[in-house]
Amino acid sequence: MHEPPSSPSLRQSMAWPHTWFGLVLGYVLMACFFFGALSVFDREIDRWAIPESRFAAQPMPSFDRMLRPIFEGMQPDKESLDELRDKVNGPLPARFDVVRSWGAYTTHRDPVLGIYASYEVPGAKDPDDAAWAGRTIDPRSGAAFDDDRLKIGSGFFYPLHYSLNLHWMDLGYWIVGLAALAMLAALVSGVVLHRKVFREFFTFRPQKTAQRSTLDLHNMTGVLALPFHFFFAFTGLVIFAGIYFPITATQLKPLHELHERVEARETGLPHDRAGTPAPLASVDAMVLEARRRWAARGMGGEVGALSLTHVGDANGYVSVYRAGTDRVALVGEGIHFQASTGRVLREDPPRSAVDSVNEFLTGLHLQHFRHWLLRWLYLLGGLMGCVCIATGFVFFVEKRKKQHAKAGSQGSRVVDALAVTTVTGMLVATLTILIANRLLPEALPRRGDVEQYVFWAAWALALLHAFWRSAPVARGKMNPAWREQCWAIAALAPTAVLLNWLTTGDHLVKTVLTDTYWPVAGVDLGLLATAALAAWAARQLGRRALADVPSPRIKAAHA
Image (cartoon, rainbow, N blue to C red; front, side, top):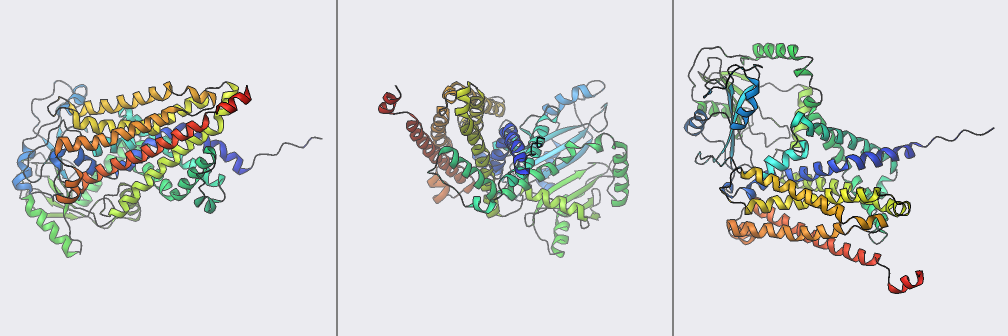
């Protein structure tokens, strides 16, 4: 009798999902980690990209004297109106007079102030549809910034890390969510595969073969930042659970609307407009009362957000939220006032256990709190995630390329070219958008859109270059595109620093020593450090390429 074949062990069975989940979705995860790491300092990148916003962070300005006249002069943005044209019965009105809400938001790192407004749409097919307007203003004077100026940090890099900036049918959110699930599976399978976790924490042998040293670095960065990687993949899924499970907008929509109405009765915050006009009392007086109440509870601080709901209506109310920079939870304690009288309607009670956990996890992921050391650790953790994924790509290719070369397979060549595009090509595109930001004319129409086109075009060129130069991989050699794109990064990064100096006058001597402004200095120093690392990597890759070339004596022996 023949013995049945033994089933693979748990460790062996984990190898396949770890390898292929990591490979197939690692390209998406690389973008999530890299741009997530940059988003830790998104406001600082905004200051670099918009020179006129380079001043100290400001508190919430006076609503009565500054913000109210600005809100009253606002109307929906053109983009919002374009989206509504097919969602109304008849033409859109020339002016929107019924204001649903006004809002203003700032953080301890924001010199500028973001303000938002929403309007009821006459003839809307769905009553929930609204027209929107947004502005960015200087809180010192009330002057509006040019709408064409792209906030590269908070308006491009930040949404790129969770949505890939693919908004059609929320496609980007779903791709990133799938990648996050795959990452959790890869982390669990990686822990099972690498039983000697403590030893691998301290094991790195750079003098060994490329395959061995790459695997050491992959294991070390994966183990060192394992809690960080697991936490951010999990909380990212929690934050966007409403997109992945949209039950409140689909199956349970009637129940959800009923819950909102019941909650409105219990909290005293009206759900609908009364239809009766009413004046607006002094919001500044409401802010002072909110501060007094926070101080009485031992929670002094600045106002982080203002919200006015049902503007101009008898059911209107004003919500004042504390800037929660002294705690992890994202939302500060809110105090709500009747808009027409200034009477306090409600103080937010302590959160339930479930809400507290959700706010804590969300706040820890988004890190709006004031803790600069932790912010730098977030950046380090994100970059370690990039190293872990990149070394996984390299190890996959190094392990298989000679076998594929003998078999005539192109698999390693394709994987390597995609890895080049995802690792160095992403850096090339990032530096290119910063250079374009400094070179494009200020008066160029749709300037922000052009900057984004430049970013994607640069990344596409990096992809073409990576495939064009990938022929040696099919022969078991190294792709020269790695080295060439590293040299491109080493040239582009200081170019961005130089252009910042030439176009704004803000050089490192000024921003560090004479007129210290760390947001811009930090970006410039980060760019120079990137250039130095890229040049070092290019030299190391050049030496390895020379080592791969057989000497004339070895060639003669083979002959």
